[in-house]
Every structure is written in C-alpha cells, then in structure tokens.
Image 1 (cartoon, one colour):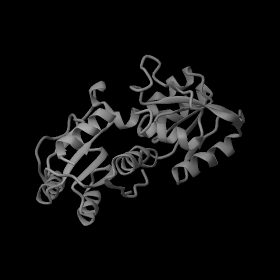
Image 2 (cartoon, rainbow, N blue to C red; image 1 turned 135 degrees about the vertical axis):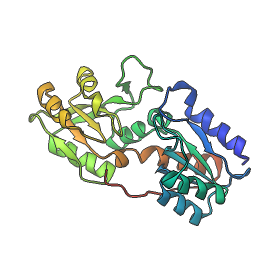
Image 3 (cartoon, rainbow, N blue to C red; image 1 turned 135 degrees about the horizontal axis):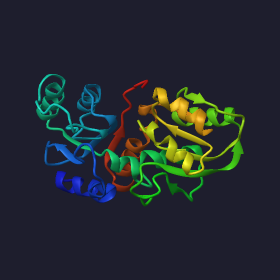
Image 4 (tube, helix red, strand yellow; image 1 turned 60 degrees about the vertical axis):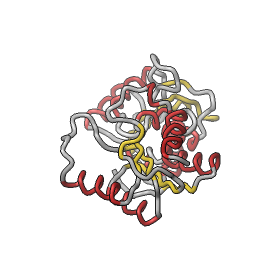
Length: 254
C-alpha cells in the first residue's frame, strides 16, 4: 500500500479532524513510499522502534507519538536518537492520540469496555460530546458485582494488579471509564451516576474525591489501559486489509 493511501485509510478510520489535540495526529515522520509491514504500539519509545526495525517494519502506528505541545522543539538527545533511527531505516511514524482513545470500535475506551463486558448501549462520559468524540464512556454490567469481584474482572481485562479505593460495600452495576491519565474526570463519572470510575493513573486528591463523592475508584495503569487501541488497529489492518501488522507490547508498569 502506498504511504499516502495508508495515511488516508487511518485518517478516514480515526477521524483526527474531530479533535483538538495535544500533538499532531497522523503522519509524524515520513518513511518509504510503500508500506507492507506495520508495527503498532502504545508509545514510540526507542525499544518499540528497535523492535520494529528488527521486524522489518515499514511503518509504526502508536497512541503516544512525538511533538507534544510545550515540548522542547529541538531534535536532540533522546528525540534525536529516536527520529534518526526512524529516518535511517526509512520507517514512517503515525501517531493518533485522542482519536485512538475515542473511536467507538478501535479505541482504547471501547476496548476496555468490551473486555469488561459493558453493555453495547453506552453513553459518553463527557455529556456535552457525542460518543464518537468523547474519550470516556459509561456503560452497564449485565449484573451487579461485588467490589472485589469487579476488581478481579478489571485485573483479568488489563493483565495486571490494580489500585482499588473501595468507598463502601455497594455493588457495582454502572461503570464509567476513561483510559490513561484521566483521573481528573472522577467528578464527571459521579455526575453520570456511576458506581465506579476506572482510569489509568491516580493523583493524591483522587482518593479524597472518591471517598467524599462516594464512588469506587480503580487505577489500572496508563499503559495497561491504553494497549487496546493499538491492538485493535493491528487487527484492523491485518484482518480487514490483508496487511502484515503486529502489535508489540513494550512493558511499562506505569
């Protein structure tokens, strides 16, 4: 597939024009004109680039790419080593941040919601946004679970231990989630009527808010909750477009 066609496919699928983001979405570093082998991952770190080089990839697609707002513009040090490795090996880098959080099929939040078995009838966590633009979702379990049973379900879904702040013995039926570093949405989760809020990270004030709002809180890992989108894009490219595409997980406990 031509690089221009590959970019068009991803842009049409993920609709980056819908979002005002913190980094450019789409093609970030240009590589060879033809793309046949693709690696996807969470973050365009050096380890992922090295793995893509070893795999013989023509392109890398990630959730966390480069050129973030307020980032130093100079291409030196770590940034130089990463970018130069891409250029020397003629590998294109594509990054999709909020679009890969929000997509109702291939997004991080959709993937986590599916893993938890939340009902197909979901609503946006950000009440002022349509579901396809909201980076958080609210859904229902088929049946209410005890807090401990729900914690086990989350841990099975993300493949790691999680931090749980249980504020009562109230069972969990309505779930609000927003992957990554979205602990600041806990009050919106409460306003949405959720019994629990799941995100990737926790801040000191988050625990106090959970206790005072009376909503259970789970921090399941930024990286762990944001693997779903990159995995889904690899499957999309492989299963629907016949490309050689593979997700490579660079372990990160954060």
